Length: 225
Image (tube, rainbow, N blue to C red):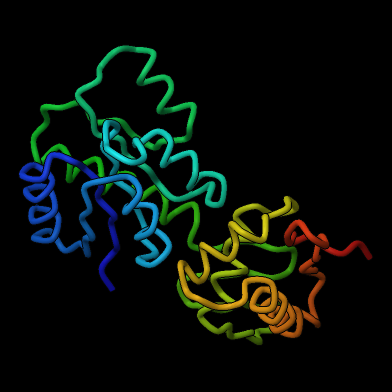
């Protein structure tokens, strides 16, 4: 399965060139030209890497990255920009970007940076070790020490992945809903409660607890023996 990249750049011609070049090299691309649309597509497309121009209408690249970092600490982000002063570069890395490409740059350099970021991301994030369990979001499975596996539905997997990315921290209800269902017109509270209940049943024979912080959100923690 091709790795997915969400590209957001308001320079349409250059953005299109990057998009087509990366497609030619085997990646699955979604290309948008403003930050607001990029944020919406992030929740629908479920990308493996984000490639954001800094200066965009609606929501700029820095603010967009902050919104995503609030719910996803691990997805690699590459900023592309003509802004080259040290303070802007420092700001990008403080927000949590993985790399920074200063315009003008060649498409070959872009490809190398993308490959590097995805390689690091794959090594770090394919498997979560949760006590005696190994969790693979890509396979939608939890592997137990005795060799048995717990298979998750698409939405159960998405919820567990978000909770793992923020292990022992509270994930707010609104952030979880948007990251799981996007802009679907369904009851957020009831949907989250039902999904968390299904996930708890899958984890009932483990030490993992999906805790409901009433009125705030959910947290994944390990139960003490």
